[in-house]
Amino acid sequence: MAGQAESLSYKNMLTIFTTPKAFRGHIEVIQRNALKSWALLDANVEVIVFGDEEGAAEVCRELGLRHEPGVERSASGTKYVRSIFGRAQEFARHDIVAYVNCDIVLTEDFARGVARVSEQFKASGRFLMVGRRWDTDITAPIDFSASDWAERARAQALEQDHQQSQDWIDYFVFPRGLYIEIPPLVIGRVGWDNWLVWKARSEGVPVVDATDAVVAIHQNHDYAYHPQGKQGVWQDEEAQRNYELAGGVRHIYSIADATHRLTE
Image (cartoon, rainbow, N blue to C red; front, side, top):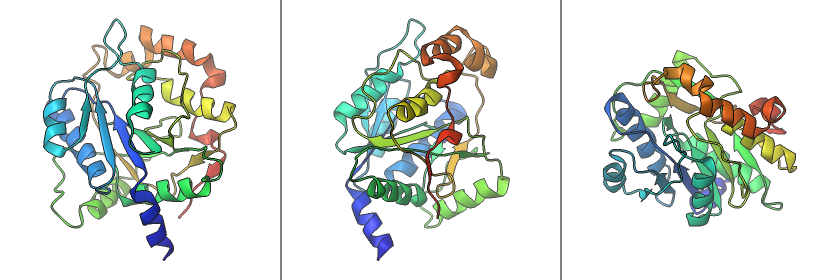
């Protein structure tokens, strides 16, 4: 009965939003896998895709997702966190929203986690749920027609057994209205995700580490989208600017800074 109650309370409350890279090659495969997995969480889950990247409109039409092409960008074309988070909270049909990186496959354990955390903090209406990811080599489209696709995907992630450190944060679940003012941080460089955790903690918002209850499946990929590869993502001018805007090391929080832990 408890599981049924969680499912029922969850069904009408979640909007997932994201922003993709261009749908080309391996990136297209893993982004399609991620988006489809979210759409299958429940018929009432809303998915919003921000950005006019190549193929985004077509994939959204195919999967029945909401596409919002307009996003505020820096001079180099990187997307501002405040634009995506601000518009998502404005447009969302549901009071609970989740930013998820577009390479993360989610299954029912994520849905259960959202339901449990939302119920726990229903009175205050304030929380942030985050968790570590499992890096997984997935190179082909997932067969979503198979009834056990989710179990197989989770098993593959656990078998490869590469859980990323607490510094890498790939999903954020929170009540709409939590993030109103965000400095001009850009997505696709380091630091913005860590700042979001610090911001919640600085305002006394409970931060829940859902790692023990949620297998977030990160599909491994290269960094060919940046001219300098992974080093550029971490060290280029915009990465350094993110670090400065975040307030330096004192505002670089990780999942280790959570105040609560969600268990099975």
